[in-house]
Picture 1 (spheres, rainbow, N blue to C red):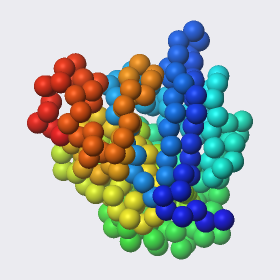
Picture 2 (picture 1 turned 180 degrees about the horizontal axis):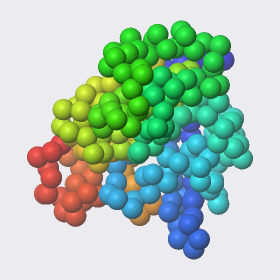
Picture 3 (picture 1 turned 90 degrees about the vertical axis):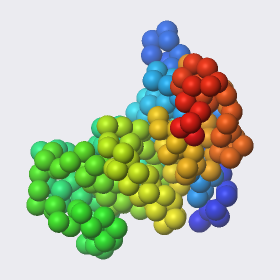
Picture 4 (picture 1 turned 90 degrees about the horizontal axis):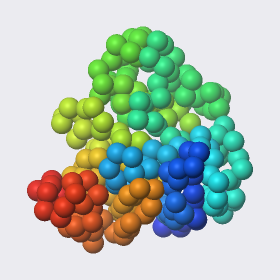
Length: 248
C-alpha cells in the first residue's frame, strides 16, 4: 500500500546502541514522515553515523524498536532492510573505486536488474556527467563526481528512504552547493531524505525538520524555521551561543 505524504514512514523508539560498555546512542526517539527532508546535526562523536548505520542493520541496538511502514524490522538483516526500500550512502560514498562508473551502476541494480536499462537511462539523464564517464574508473573521478556516482548507484533501485552520512564532507564549496541541490531534487522526485551534516547553512536551507544529537542523546528537535537561531544548535558545534551564528 502506497503511503501518503506526511504519513510516518520510519520511527524508532528508545533506540540504544552500545560499543562495549559505552552508549553511543541512549534512548533515541526519531520519526520520519514520507516526503520529508530530515537533517541530523551534531559534533563529531555525537552518534550521528552510529544512528544512520543502525537504521540499516549495520549496528544492532541493545534496546528499542524500529518500525518501517508500520512493520517491526529491528531483527532484520541489512540485506533485507535495503531490499525493503531503505538505503544508506555512507560518508565515503559506498562506490567501488577500482570498477568503472557503469559497473558501479550495474551493482546498484543488483536487486532490480530486470529494470536495469530503464533505470540507467533515468540516472544518466538526471546526472549527465555520468553519461560522459561510463567507461572511466570510478577512483579517477573528482571527489564531487564520486559523490554523484554514489547518488546514481543508489537510484538504480526504487528505494523509499535515502540516508546520507555527511554528503558534503571534503567537497569544495561549489560541489557542496551542487550536491545539496541534487538532494533537494531527489526530494522533489518523491524520495524521503534523512541526512547527517556538519554544514549548518546547507542543512537549514533544505531541511523540513531538525534533530540535534549530543553524546548519543537527542537534545533538540523541531521544525527547521523554528530552530534556526536556537543557541543549543550553535552550542552543539561551537561551544557557545554566539560563535557561528553568521553561518545559519
